[in-house]
Image (cartoon, rainbow, N blue to C red; front, top):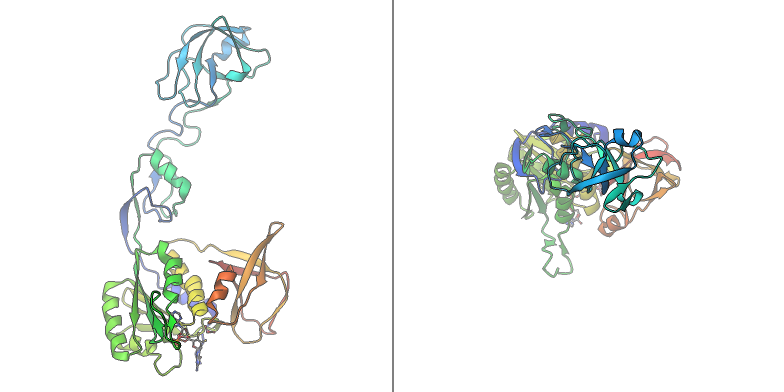
Length: 396
Ligand SMILES: Nc1nc2c(c(=O)[nH]1)N[C@H]1C(S)=C(S)[C@@H](COP(=O)(O)OP(=O)(O)OC[C@H]3O[C@@H](n4cnc5c(N)ncnc54)[C@H](O)[C@@H]3O)O[C@H]1N2
Ligand code: MOO
């Protein structure tokens, strides 16, 4: 059997990344997208000397030379242009968010002051030149605030809004078809006969990758070679990537590898030295790629988490997010395979611990809901994995 290792499979898949181009999208809703342009400050951040406390603005020079009683020239609210404080020993009442009055260089909080007969009285021992967020201290006009290649997260929307980017250029996402096969499968709304099951793989897989895809349209192909060939041919013309589940092992109606050959999809590899997901098949036809995942629900989902999603992220130029967890108990795994063990994760005083939650094998889809992640335990002579050892973890 021409197994390849998990490492080799990863490399072969990541050799086949594609660039799907760029597109402008509304900034609102762009979280998760990858920037295809630098985002620059159109003004200083903040754009003016911003008062940071409700209180009074005054001149440090007056206070330092002994003045404690100031004439109040008026009140300045946020949204109003800065007034001018052009007389000695005067103050302006200011609100948080107002531009600092011209000529003033200090602000005191209202609760630290007394107003008597319309005059402001300041206490002794005051630190001057406080409570001002200075213009340009955070970022200067023209500075790059978000770099091309950055994956947008929630606070970035505030940056985009602040610089007036109502539309932003991002990397395009692929159109993906998620395809099931198998005559035993019926739809969710149908009542299965005793020998049938409802199809479930497509939903878990589609959802896991949906943020990285333009579409995750779903299709079903019957266990028939001619139909499989013609449907695959059609889908290859209309989608950037196909993700199939089922029909890749040794069964008499496992047509996927044969059908791929017939539609001209070149095999990059077939079978990985791993459990679950051993019979995974991966191929390409020109710019199109095909992931043919095993039908068993745990295997299909694990392969989507471990191989398909990272491929999508690599297509956008994102670095893999590597997370690790410490094995909470000793584990023995005899087969000569890398083991993606289902685990529950718990944070133990800042250390991420992984506890086995293995279920009943590749068909036990309910166990995926009990577990939180797959722990990638590389193939090891000796079959022994010790408590406290650290492994890469794939959360979902
Ligand atoms: N003689 C051998 N038999 C098998 C081998 C092998 O090496 N030699 N490998 C086993 C392993 S490991 C796996 S994994 C499976 C993979 O099989 P297929 O990819 O051909 O998948 P199917 O046979 O079509 O289905 C397997 C299983 O999964 C259920 N299934 C399929 N699609 C869905 C779906 N969309 N939603 C829910 N469940 C689905 C299907 O009903 C089967 O029970 O092969 C082993 N056999
Ligand atoms: O590889 Mo299969 O995915 O073990 O059940």
